[in-house]
Image (cartoon, rainbow, N blue to C red; front, side):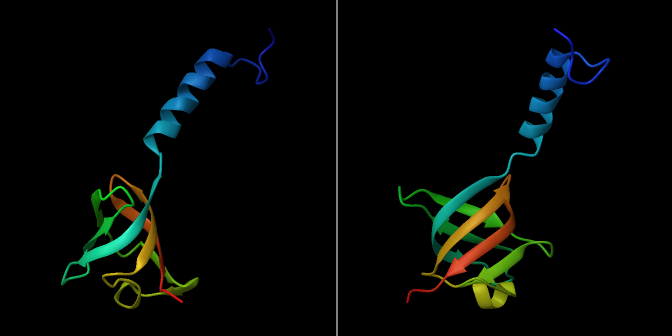
Length: 100
């Protein structure tokens, strides 16, 4: 077969692509916030299966509360529902929802 990109073997390309995708795989976790560190550096979230996941945050983490971008101090509170996008438990985005 003729490669789609001249001079690039399809098998080599796919192998490289798979390694890059695995290295940058983001995960999502959803559940109830159960604990927030006093210094705001991490929080815990309880998933539907009762598994508790510790999530680290940093200055690059984006927080939303009911769809509006806010600071972590306004978003994070025990008992609220959250959806977290993270890599190796470091959150890039935390979407928090209050009950309505």
